Image (tube, rainbow, N blue to C red):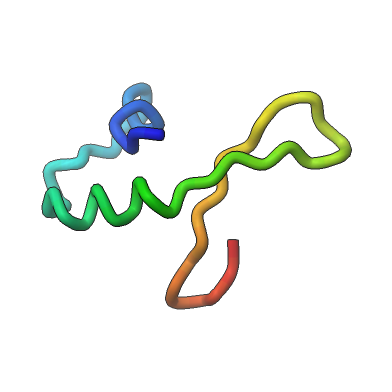
Length: 52
């Protein structure tokens, strides 16, 4: 999953991040299908808060 694809329709830009930071974040994006919905949801593990 590419971060640029996630942010393409938003006001956020990737220019404020280094390429290494973007690649590191993209590696942590996972897709999960909760029991209550029919579609996949993107999750990222938060290293600071230790939450997803």
